[in-house]
Length: 171
Image (cartoon, rainbow, N blue to C red; front, side, top):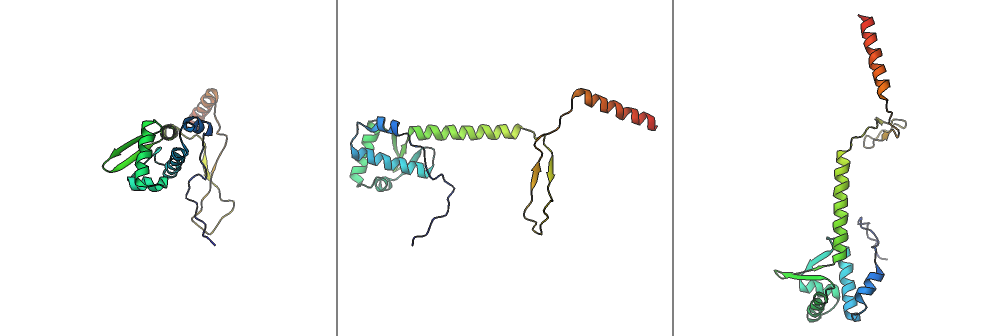
């Protein structure tokens, strides 16, 4: 019986826009469509901003073909503008434009949310909950009050006035 792999934290699926894929690939033969689908799967699996950078040997293995066919297919993918294909220092980078755009949007959204959260001040009271004491010191529960209480300006002025009056009377 095969061992099950531990959860790697990656999503078990990916959004696949089949209409876009069909529209983009319907004019190309099954060899190109299959090779591109394998590259797309690897791009998704690597999760590296919509691109992969590998040697030609590695890309041939991904496409399950020979080195000669891999070079020919990559040239075709580039010349037909299916993807951006560049070569530098013996490494080939294949970029899926949609995946790169989506990854950039996700990253920008993450950065925007992080900046927003860091600017926020929590006005909720934080109290520790000890209803179920435990001998373990590794677990702590923090309870956040859902509704913070706000005072009107008149209530604040009235409280300050009463405080001053108490101070005057106590002297």
